[in-house]
Image (cartoon, rainbow, N blue to C red):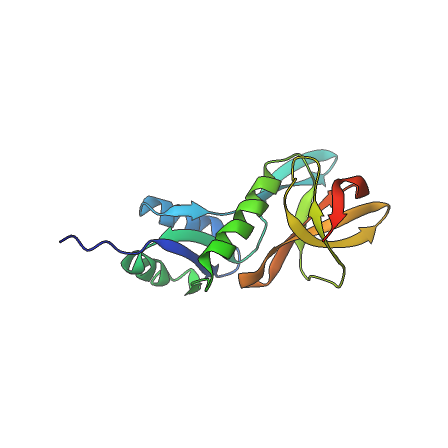
Length: 165
């Protein structure tokens, strides 16, 4: 009888600015890796330079069995490896964030979830997502949560794309 390890999502909490290096190591070991990146443009002496930055600094997501995750833990660029208690909820929230990154919407890290209205996006490319909203400069910002690491991403939408839950 073949011993099949349970493959599930893990969260690697990395040392500062090591997310991409850890992702490369995990991919080299054959793991499915998810490192959500967003585009950041900075101007230097009149030139615009684009960078890909981790949406959740210090975090990398990967799918692995128990022995594979132990190898990731041994990497000295990884502070710790966590396992979400509700993998289905985690996978759903991560999928929502990845879907949002595929759109042409401006997405940025929203360090804290502030009090706000719970909404469902009912129109547009993000239809079906739930989140919290905060009003800023005429647009609404919806926070897509990744509860397990207490982080969220903010995406700007118009009020007619939302419905109160």
